[in-house]
Image (spheres, rainbow, N blue to C red):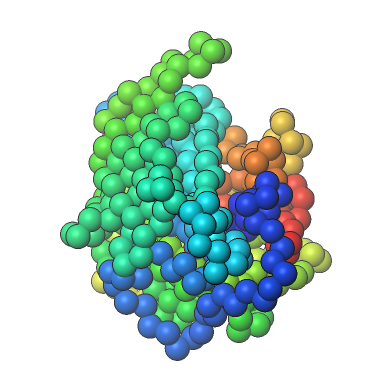
Length: 368
């Protein structure tokens, strides 16, 4: 979803990585007539203000028990004077965030990192996906498969994500509107139906919770998005869904919520297994809460079970587990819900995906 990276940029500013520049910094603009080119556009676009590679998925352990995972790498241009030649000049920030949803724990485990780009330890390369922050990496090979390596505080991810379908260009051939103004847009494509294999480990906890060391298989969804704009000033948060359906279809839907509780902007796209895409806008898309969960830590209530309508079709979303809240108030300042969900209709499971719910505890501050 557009501006996931804004919550990271806010804390970067507070920590002194980003200062309000005295000069006018010109970032590249998103325009509707720019074609996406692969594999070059899988790499970084440093002329734009924000960018992220966001992989989510469902994993199956050998015993059949499911896990959810999420790994995100952000690149954020700080607006620092580009004429500064210093090696420590904070012109780009690299931020990484990973999470593991394990029903055997009943809660989310997560970790996060942030650093200035440089010295071969933190970077986002152009021309092909190659993003690194210390020992965390997301790398795209020449054949298109991705390697995910994460050594977090309480868990590790060593995964291979192999494409089974072509990239899915979101919006109008990759130009994705997020608000009523044409400038409120991003370049955005997805890679759904990624086949996953690898290994997940998790340390045992001080509470006596058992650890995990398991080979896993499953499916994943990867979003890559870049932009120089923010959402509409009256936006307070969003609901976003990316789902791999069992018949080979892929569903993406989002709703940007406004201060009055209404919808600022909404869009959805459903691509069937043959590659045909059906797009939905405005009143054709809606997220309706079915059940809420109240966080015992923050007191925030989230609609963790929802019905999503895309045209004449409805989809029921139910969480792998309720407690998938990510509290990054000590770093990014944001608290939100981001977790694995089952997708069904009339009691029949149709697929699996990830749901992101932001702005429910406190409206997101998208301007700095």
